[in-house]
Image 1 (cartoon, rainbow, N blue to C red):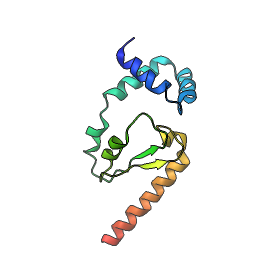
Image 2 (cartoon, rainbow, N blue to C red):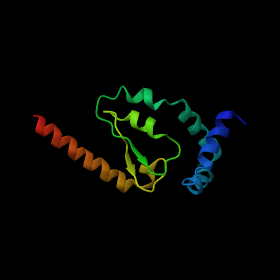
Image 3 (cartoon, rainbow, N blue to C red):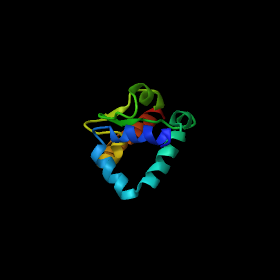
Image 4 (cartoon, rainbow, N blue to C red):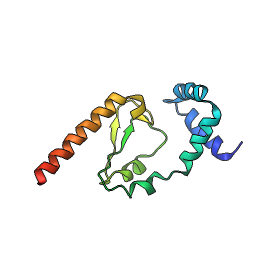
Length: 120
């Protein structure tokens, strides 16, 4: 078994907040597709990508996210700052609560528009 597969599977499958949904997902999409996505995820360096983004970035995480650490999460924001935490949710919180995530985006958009209007 390749090391990346063992590490990724262990991370996903041992995360108590995502175990049952992960098993259902893997069964539904198949292990080969999951393996391809995990391989791509390990190659993607989000911290290198986000520095090129020229608009504000707000990081949203789940309270029970065990796949990424707070310091790394905070470093991704532009400006750098603490992430917005969605209560009771695991990693990929926007997928588990899309309405709540959409509400956060709408609220932040309103804040950005108000700040832009005040500045002009």
